[in-house]
Amino acid sequence: DQQVKQNSPSLSVQEGRISILNCDYTNSMFDYFLWYKKYPAEGPTFLISISSIKDKNEDGRFTVFLNKSAKHLSLHIVPSQPGDSAVYFCAAPPYGGSQGNLIFGKGTKLSVKP
Amino acid sequence: DAGVTQSPTHLIKTRGQQVTLRCSPKSGHDTVSWYQQALGQGPQFIFQYYEEEERQRGNFPDRFSGHQFPNYSSELNVNALLLGDSALYLCASRSTADYTFGSGTRLTVV
Image (cartoon, rainbow over all chains, first blue to last red):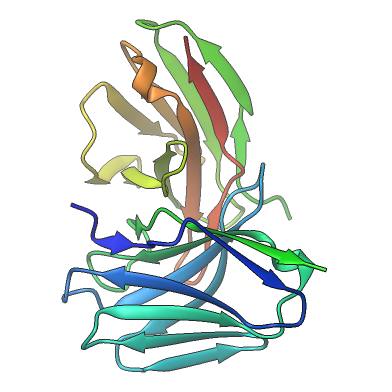
């Protein structure tokens, strides 16, 4: 039973346009969510997070939106750049704020074309 | 400042063998977690070590075991390797405000 789902394996966008990556979760007890970016041959790197007490968190070109009633979050990248091409993972800690144990989605591979 | 260091980067083993993977945490980090990332999947939590003890464990058989040393470095051991154990094994270390992944060890079981 996958508790964090990323249903789009890949996404291709043009440089300068918006990239929207989606994530759904099934466990209503989750109260904190993270997005990680992963380049080939590197480990995942933290991108942005959101607590369930918020519905939006913004950091530069990256914004995460949380819709608790729909159990859905999305990552918006505006404007998209070729260097954003990577695999993006949505993750949640099952036991609250601790990051010691994260449940990851399968990831979405983003390709930004010049 | 070195981040999380994992060794080796790549490894090929035969089914039934045993393997040991190593992780040196980022300076200042005292907690180490291990993850398995199979092809096309997200990382799956194996276990976490703190103060040289296993503190949390994911849904992995006891063929997977670990150890943490006094200098906070850690080992992941897998016994009786199966073809399905082929994956990228990621180590992550943590302080209260920072959670950092290593680049991983690519294990291939043939």
